[in-house]
Amino acid sequence: MATRRSVAWDFVVVVVGAAALVFLVCFTWEADQYAGPPPPAPLLPRRPAPRGPPELFPPPGPLLDMPAVSFVSNTECFGERLLLAILVVSHPANAALRDAHRAHVPWEALDALGARRVFVLADASGAGQPEYPSVGLQQVALEAGRHRDLVVADFPEHYRSLTYKHVLALSWAAAFCPSAAFLLKMDDDIMVDVWALAALLRAGPALDAQGRLQAGLVSGGRPLARHEAWTAGLVQRGLRPQRAGGKWRVTQQEYAGHVYPDFLSGWAYLATRPAATALLQAAARLPPFWIDDVHVTGTAAALAGVPRYALNRHYTLLPSAAACCLDLSTRHGAPLPSPAPLCDLLVAPSGKNVTLMAAWLTAARRCHLEGVCPVTFPAACRATHLRQGVGTVIKLS
Ligand SMILES: *[C@@H]1O[C@H](CO)[C@@H](O)[C@H](O)[C@H]1NC(C)=O
Image (cartoon, rainbow, N blue to C red; front, side, top):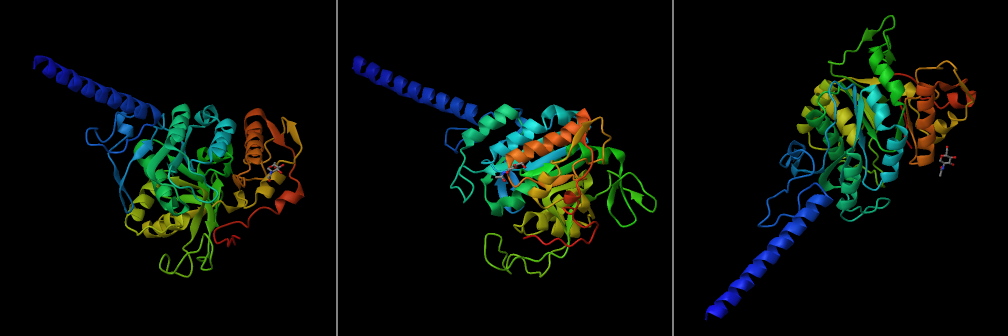
């Protein structure tokens, strides 16, 4: 009897001990693999102690019409009194593009400008989309641990989730990087001359008489204060919803109007902190529309009365045009031909060409930091500029 009880007792002790060990191992493994919640289990707390300070992992909260979104990974912005927070909307599968940004505009270079950069992602661990394979959360967590520059939310990746990612990026900056005076929202396949951009912001952006953004005040213009709500980028005026078929088809139910409001291309645009706050407040009052730049910088900006200023002449729509600007003779000690030395461009698309991105960002950095600058612009690249000014109609193919 005593023996049987003790055997039974031993059995219980072994089972409980084994269960505790399994629990501990799983828990530790999970916590080590990714800093997010494990699948809810009755005996587990909803979220284990995440890697990083607990304030980076607030309880799940609403994001537009999604009631409970939480971070799988998060980071702080590391710094006070920053000039610029760069919010790069990315996809877990685009690690090569993120690495190109990190390699060619490294943390130290950003730090010298008073800038920080994070990549904003969602969860691609589910079924992949065409062009975008599924990526496990463990892999994303490894990258987050290595670089500490990922903001990863737990809603599924999809091109129809872009509005959520866009709003998440602005919300992240509001919550975790409140000291940055300006925000740059950009996509991961876009190249930005951050040195020229920072110079523009430090010089005191101003409007000229035609409402175009300039570095510094010109006669007939007015200065733009950083504590005012305004945005600037590639102004798109007169674009219409694409009603024909295809991935980007927009139905009448999704968007009833015939013409979109003026909006800024989501490739890359600047917002002051008050503008970002106003856009977030307006977006919270609107039913989400999945074309994110139209929705946030068009519909929400119009509702909030946030102006959108044109930097159109500093953008190109073609990777080949950006590549053209690299085929220039360079000379050490050549005067900076323009505040933005690569054909006066601040923003250009890479076409997801990592080689082009590396070359373009390197050329910008060498000119700004090493004084190895283009000597002249070949006439062939001049035609690549967009027409200037507010009111430019740009037809996207
Ligand atoms: C990528 O860019 C480089 C540099 O401009 C160019 O030589 C190369 O042909 C491009 N690759 C593709 C696939 O377009």
